[in-house]
Each structure stands twice: as structure tokens, then as C-alpha cells.
Length: 66
Picture 1 (cartoon, helix red, strand yellow):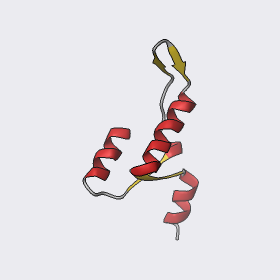
Picture 2 (tube, helix red, strand yellow):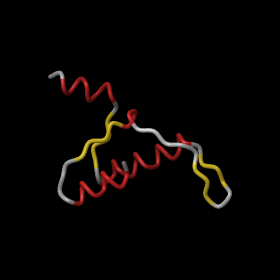
Picture 3 (cartoon, helix red, strand yellow):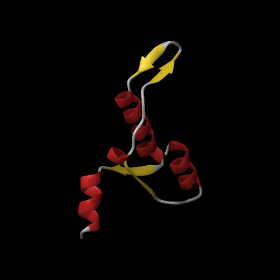
């Protein structure tokens, strides 16, 4: 999701990511385990900073029903 959204944004697309429709897993870096919830938050915050509108399922469904 990260690479795809960044690439699409670089090509000029306006991107939206539904954050609670994405999943990850614990990662390890230099012997330290990073819990999935922190991995997810870090990636979503980076995408929201400069590449996409990040929303949850409830909000997108409400917008679509208008």
C-alpha cells in the first residue's frame, strides 16, 4: 500500500487510503520488535503527511452515501 500510494501520488493521482482496511504485522529492526499497531500508525501518518487522504471505513461510507 505504501509504495503503490506513493507512486500514484507521484504520478499526480489524488489518493485516499482507508486505514482500517489495511493490515500489517510486527516487524523487527536491529533486534527490536516493532508491534504491528505502531508499524501501521507510522505508515499511515507518513502517507497522510504528503501522499494521501487517510480515512476510516465509516467515514468513506458516509461520504459515498451523500
